[in-house]
Length: 165
Image (tube, rainbow, N blue to C red; front, side, top):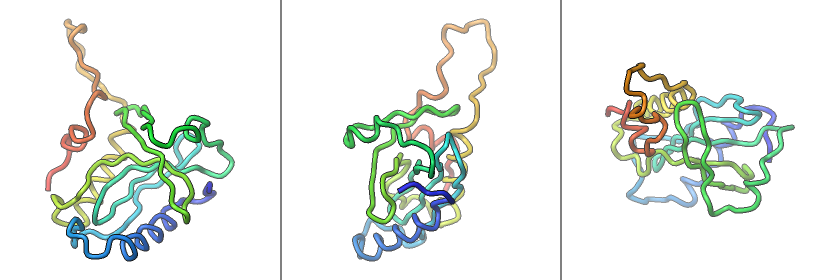
């Protein structure tokens, strides 16, 4: 279901319910972390934000009211879709929850036991959102043939560029 306003509250309610009803006492959960949807803003006609939970950190793209959901997303739910941002190209997977409808998710970390506090994971989420929107700049050099594209990093390399517990 498309959202005309930020979907942050709906994501928080849905994932709190998932934590209570589906996750139970799974040892995978980090007790220092709570469910929070952070940094949601309009991006390319949709909503872009991050979802912090006691079991994962993901970037999410959510349909916005009035913007068509790409046909590629309706055809194949199993194959990841590479989304190119200025700062990175990341794989997103189509997900769906009854309360939310379809959305795209890119898992940045799971489990999240490495983070000592909710604030540290929340800051990582906000930094990830900022990092993907930055235009990657490289120092000019005479050897332009050996310059590596800055967005050819794995999700872990992407996160390790700024994460410190």
